[in-house]
Amino acid sequence: MSESKPPFNEKVMMFSCSGAANVGEIADEALRRLMFEGKGEMSCVDGVAASLDDFMAKTRAAETVIVVDGCDNECGRRIMEERGFGNIIKYVRVIDLGIEKVKPKRAEETEIATVREHVASLL
Image (cartoon, rainbow, N blue to C red; front, top):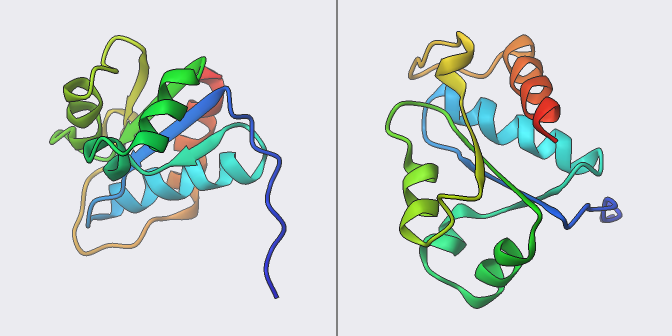
C-alpha cells in the first residue's frame, strides 16, 4: 500500500547532503519531517548537481531554498553555488548546531529535532 503524497509547499525547496556519517542522516531526516509536515518540498541535490531540467526549474521557481549540510565539507552548499543558487539559499550546517560528526553512528532523535526546529525557524 502506498502512502498519500503530503501537501508540499512548493515555494520552499529543501536540500540535504546526506553523507555517510550521523550528521548527514540527521540533515536528511530533519528535512524529510518538515516535508511531510507540509513545510516545503524536499528535493535531490544530486539532481541540481547534474543540472537536470526539472530540478533546476523547481529550484529557480522557489521563493525559499534551504540547504542543510552535515559537516564542514559543505557539499550541498558547493553544489548550489556551482549551479548559480548560492545567493538565494538559506544555509545550515548540522555541526554548527553543536552536533558532532561521528562515523559510524546513527542519528539520535534529539539531534534530528534540534535541526528540524532550527530549519523550521528559517521558514
